[in-house]
Amino acid sequence: MAGLKYMSGFGNEFASEDPRCPGSLPEGQNNPQVCPYGLYAEQLSGSAFTCPRSTNKRSWLYRILPSVRHKPFTPMSCGDLTENWNEVEPDPNQLRWKPFIIPKSSEKKVDFISVKDFILVHTAHMQGMRFSVDVFGETRGYILEVFGAHFELPDLGPIGANGMANPRDFQTPVAWYEDRTVATGYTVVNKYQGKLFSCQQDFSPFNVVAWHGNYTPYKYNLENFMVINCVAFDHADPSIFTVLTAKSTRPGVAIADFVIFPPRWGVADHTFRPPYYHRNCMSEFMGLIKGHYEAKEGFQPGGASLHSIMTPHGPDVDCFEKNSTAVLKPERVAEGTMAFMFESSFSMAVTKWGLDTCHRLDKSYYKCWEALKNHFNPNWKPSSK
Image 1: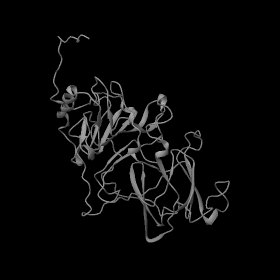
Image 2: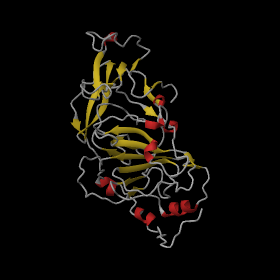
Image 3: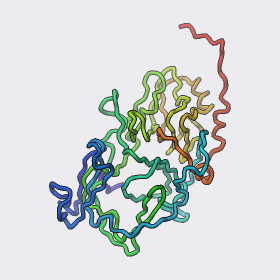
Image 4: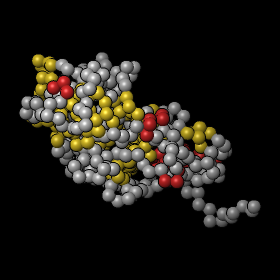
């Protein structure tokens, strides 16, 4: 948006102060006896104090009033949001959801908390960072929450120093404060142990005049992803499309990977180019932001699919037949498309809302593979070279 300013980088130690208050960052210390401009110093910790420096996340905020000044939290309606993962029996089948309905601007106004048709994938709860969601026009989206680790850029290994999601393309907002008091109060919603609570305060929670640290919100344009793909033969594993990873304690195994399937060139010779048939020790949740996903005709923007641990999946029959006989030449793949995957080493439970109440589950999904033919020929002979 025009007028908004950002700092470039991922995981950096940033420092920023609102230009309306020059010198608002304390000199040489974090917690002076009296802060410049009469501000309050408040540390926001995203990791334990004693985490190694490479994983330690914290920021110092210098704000007009501290976040501790609020009325008591009280329970609020959670709607279809639930922490009860045992409402329904586990379902190992391939699951796909039809596009979720976008709330119309002409209908009753909904906010981020009250909107019902959204997809939330999480392993637990978020830590500490307050935000508001304001959109322009009719909007829907996908949310991934992780707990126990922070997202980081994946290691590049033999790829080298550059490629995939480059750090300079991540943007962190500069300091900007709102010194505003509202008699009717601001409502702060807190998600705690899977339930929602709200409290009231009469001042804007966005009252940070200056800050420094590395525990920050950021944004990233997926179109900036530098795609790496096979240029000879075979189909590379989708890990080459990883934007961010939240690592577990086991090397190479993620709590969650955020993977995208952006527009790219397909040039592999004597190769079945679409995604291969697969059974995975990881859970794969996919969504389609826009466009047309090349491996399945029925997968539509705004929908989703879940292929649980060791649940078989892969191209539908039309995709297999077409690409098994296609003339292989360089071609653009997924032009105008942006699909993504949340992959996790954890098994993903689906709520009663997801399986029943939302009425968006595509119960005919399995049929896209039913027409796959038996092409086995025991008399096949290799062609002479």
